[in-house]
Image: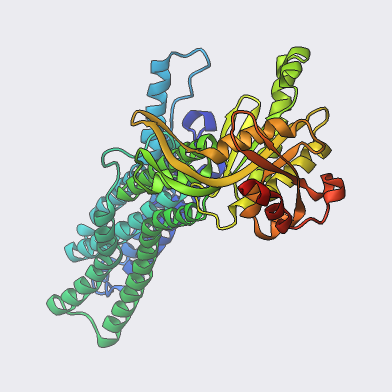
Length: 532
């Protein structure tokens, strides 16, 4: 027979008002419906006419007992269910940690075992109804008492099963709340296998037992006309279909919902959203699966964070290469282009401005450098105080590395002049063969580029600080730049500091004055005399 849970305040048991109202509905409604079905089956479907012929008051007596017990069961079940789901008031702000932990354990226990607690209340009330109606009828007729008892028992089992599943569904958000910090541990409620078997037993086997008992009674006791037996089978079969479908649907939902939640979160992770998280609302192995998914995503999130930090320190291309391949010390000869940029007047800047302004100026400067280099498929190899070294063609091969570096040099010169107030920088671009690889020791190493293009670019940067536009490229870079070389003009040749041979110096056409429009062939004419 029915019983309901009436909630106290939210502070008492931690359940939201809407949850408490829903619990009252899903507990009371199925039990009232189940009691009504039992009444109809017992009074008007089963062939009990002959049994009560000698006691005409039997039907009236049962109806009066039914109404009185129904009202009493609702009242008792409400009060009992309220106490079964009640949690002591939350401790105040000054409570010690042990008290807080005890309260949390109590809330967790009540919420996670809520379906079982309320199902127990319902089961006890239905058992009491079974005993009551058997005693009311057995003295008039043992067969009548047995028939009524079997009907009440079967109706109670099916109703309690449906109620259990509905309570489990209503408490899903509350379960997710208490399992948010600590996943399910141990076996608090039936597992997936027992849940599936129980679905069949309670939703299909129990109603069909009623059909079998009706057929057995017809064979043993008689008293069934063909029409009456057909009515009994139709009614009990219909009840079995409806109850079986309801229990199966609720069980399927209980099993599928956690899996579908994991699948939705998995799609988010596949799309690159590593903040995806599954609310853990199942206390079976599926809840462990949900918690395990969250742990896995947390690991992926941490791995992505480390990868992002790694990429910020060494560059995305280097980070990706290191993660995809075994890291080995040593290098290989590669055709690369190098861009070196150095701030002009950094010593004066540090001496005349507060430290935070110096840092802000350097960050703004390097932001432009990184943006331009990355737009032109380059890689920032390192920052050296107020300077930066960018490489094109390593670690990822680039067919037009020299052209990309020269284009980046022109763009960088224009953006520094137009976007950064009171800041100028020398820019040098060179190209040629260099050794690119991991340099250092197995305990600490870095991917870098070593070779003549790097040294030449650094020297060009020094010379670039003395000219209009502050950008210089070597003749070696122009020779490898294809069509981009037409945008540059060789203005002179000189021996750079620390070097023995002359280097052809080129500037963008917009800074070359009379040299605008010069072709790459001009470069070969200039160099012819020096080749001797």
